[in-house]
Length: 142
Image (cartoon, rainbow, N blue to C red):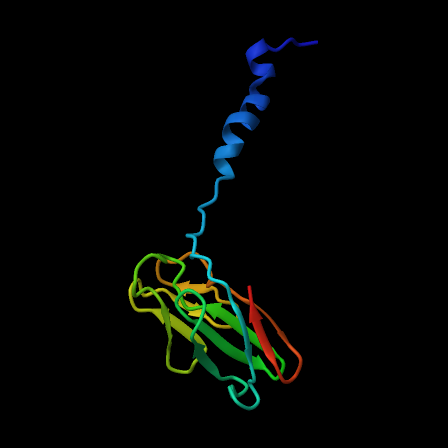
């Protein structure tokens, strides 16, 4: 039987303790300041939003983007760009066609289907809000 030097026997343990934590570090998303959100809208009447349509709504930190994907499915995001939420003008605006938004400060572009970035320096998705919809009332909350 071959005897390994003591140092070599503990080498795999050394790798786990020293190298693994370095490999698992993730870049943290910038923190968008918390603002209480609890709104009720009527997307079929008073606050009309057509299927495939999108609107801005006052509220949240820098505003809210509402995209009506299907009759009973919405995509609701904070307008504040997650790349640099502290910049005063860092918020997204609709692009032509209404399916994407862009931040005019850092030029990051996001898809409204899921809020994911597809161009620009932002590696983080837009902050999504929760909602419930009963066919008449859209409740947006965090």
